[in-house]
Length: 417
Image 1 (cartoon, rainbow, N blue to C red):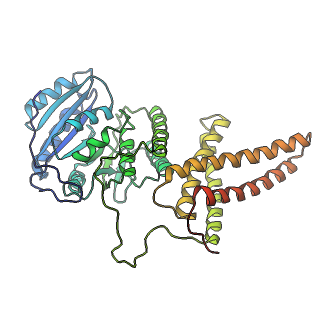
Image 2 (image 1 turned 45 degrees about the vertical axis):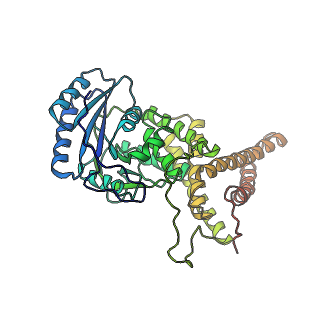
Image 3 (image 1 turned 90 degrees about the horizontal axis):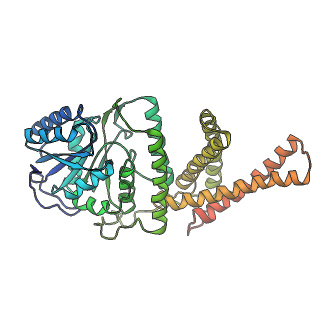
């Protein structure tokens, strides 16, 4: 197949400035059975690039084994529009499409957007510019960043916010929206990342961003205008299940060190502008730690009850209780990490793994107290059960605080009272 592509200058190293007039951009549109949406998307995008986009740009349509004539249509569009080319892949997967097309691209910056054009094109130039001038390595459109405007149903809004919150709690991620179909990257940087991204489907975006952030790359966020595509074919349940598995897999890779990519260009560590400037996490007092721990505990308990009530509408008792406890434990650990013990930079994945261990010990201790009561007393009254459970909870809470302070969130500096 023939690719009609603008040629540009060599990519500049991170931290340097490329020549704006010669930097090239390749916009990739993955498609699967999109005969209805594709022509309008290409016409609108080509017109926008011709009228309002200052960089030489190409459009690459990547067909993921469509069965409805999408690739034949893509070939017709490539003959009709000078900047368009079409590529055919024999297996499905958005991640697979982006891996193959971004690896082969000769542009300085590669972009990905959905064929439905849910994201307003006015955000394209703010997305690309920080990459062209060397300020950032990747850029993402965000429907959750301040200034964004979105139109979507309450179900999708809830799922999106819940998923991105879980990413923050489990990995300490600083980006706000992992799954918006509007992303860009410096080609020289992303090629090295792609070799370490295992997922070929919907989790591709999240895994790419988590690896980039873990390896010290800079991710720029652009608030976008976004309108939901009501014809979306994403299976929310199966996608959510695969995403949670992916988060666990990436956390394990971080813990054992395989998520480190040695050959990536490194940005220098930030330095204080003045030698007397104070940097690093704060050193909270013991009083503050106890108060913060107590407040977060109360909030976690309320959240657990609310979440259990919601989940119980669809799930069995034990499953709903377990899922609510695990999610609230992640929230509790992340809140204590950020506020109680002031560990806001790095180590979130390891902290959450340890936090789950501490929760398991607490759960075993309180359950053991009840089992011990029933072993000693044949038929204890409900009041006695509550008193035993309350006593065990107090002792377990103190033990949990000490484990969080002395094991999960260790510090070389002892807080003062």
